[in-house]
Image: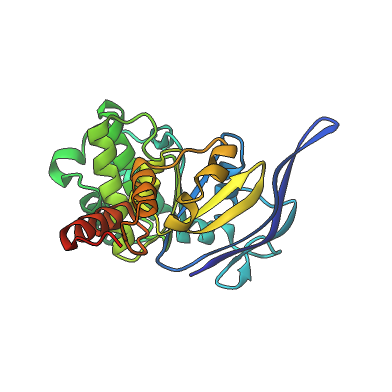
Length: 284
């Protein structure tokens, strides 16, 4: 279920003034990939995310899902949001039901599913994010830790079984342990076949997970490609106020010194390539 953005633009109006949030974005999100969107604050990342499931309508351009314009007259926006799940930054603000079970069941109920199917989906979603059903189902989501609340919010989206999962700064404000748990969930979901769009300021997270990176600056798509190909352009990223993961800095320096690490796209692959190169004594 690829998503294709064609000349996508979005302008915000405030009285007589107009602010350009996105301008002529061309981007394809392929089935099964984990695409990271990065950019400085105000670059348009969150605005772009809200176009992927029709929460915002473009000023111009199109958003195509399976070849169909999601904003054309007669398009079923409600059905679209079951296919493209969006987890906002600080998703605990999306929680509102009195128990964890009811919160996760809210989406499937809106889909008109039978109670047996709803129950199966709640149980399955909780299992996928590491929430023990009997222990957690009757607890108030507002009495949980920050990391647990994020997992409940994520489970609520997963219970609708979306083909595409859009995560806007999913680890913001979490402690290291909760962040690692959530990132493991995201990686596993992608490996199971869910297409993931990850918006993040944390470059190490992007390097650890993403196979492809798209860079926004001032509402424009300025770079796009495999993770390694983006992060080796350190000077250009620095000019946009973006940092590079330490592993890529080290890998680039070692390659400049003649150590062949191969063509690796993920942080774990870089580490494997480094270990293999050292073991093999490859100093080119």
